[in-house]
Image (cartoon, rainbow over all chains, first blue to last red; front, side, top):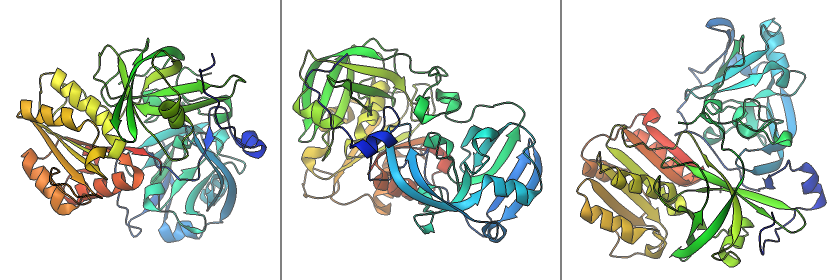
Length: 202
Length: 243
């Protein structure tokens, strides 16, 4: 169906190539979250890998910053239809977390868990091989609280609700368990290029 | 709370358009969507003759079960879809909508009160839906809306909300304008801690839940003021627009 009188503003060729279906480019960095940014004291910050309730490895802030660092530059895509190009993130790659913990991923799924009690599920297959990190810096500066600082998950090839803010840990699960938004109608995986926004999307 | 997806894109006919403020219009739609909950939004999709599509999310202003779906759409500088709505759309036009969407920024008549609503500018739209749902449910718990806008004219739904406050002892409506001063507004400054304290005092009891909606900087500032005033973070629900 075409909309009477709507011509639209087409992105340039470069942007068009980089925009998943239904997305538009923004220069802003919009914020979506459930509530206020939680106050997190770095002195008490801990990041923990768990399998179910059992801790596998844990780092305080100083230990975490001493882990191998990774930088990633690229585009991010929010399910609310904005995409932001050429963002620069720095943090610790998921692969390096496993190496530092001396483990292989014990199950194929995990839940990213946040200090504000948000959680979101991500398959391990979407995190390994340099696809994801726990980010502590954005555009060269410490990650602002409103964008998930001190540390957030970054899984840039999935819709950005998967990149959980205010991350406190990753919990490996036997099954793919729905997180906060997935329980509220959002897709279990969220691939922007397949436009997996909502539960019923393929 | 729904565990279902929003379903398919549906055709919606624009039945009428009202100018809500100098930069915001209400678009009334006849659309075959499931009944929404107060606070939800829909996705809107527009298609150009060559197949190019644009989509945006817009909050619903109407009460659940209303005959027509009302969307409050602000004209954004450089807006692609909002410019279509403000410059092109006419009653009788058909657009595509999907929804209702959103499973967190919701109010249901049975939930505990009191309820505090805080809006920045056009962020009032989903809060109007909540206020209308509250009125429709028989005003079950005390509710207060604090609305901040740049000018008196930019306080969308002002007359209706004032009327609601006049008709229901349980509904409070407090306004503040941040640019042009106007004696008719309650306050003439950005929301600050004294204003939050005065608003909470007027509500009379600690709110069971607070809903804050507007531009991101506004929402984060207000949410942190509420936390500083002693509201539990988990009692504060936010909906943020870009910018």
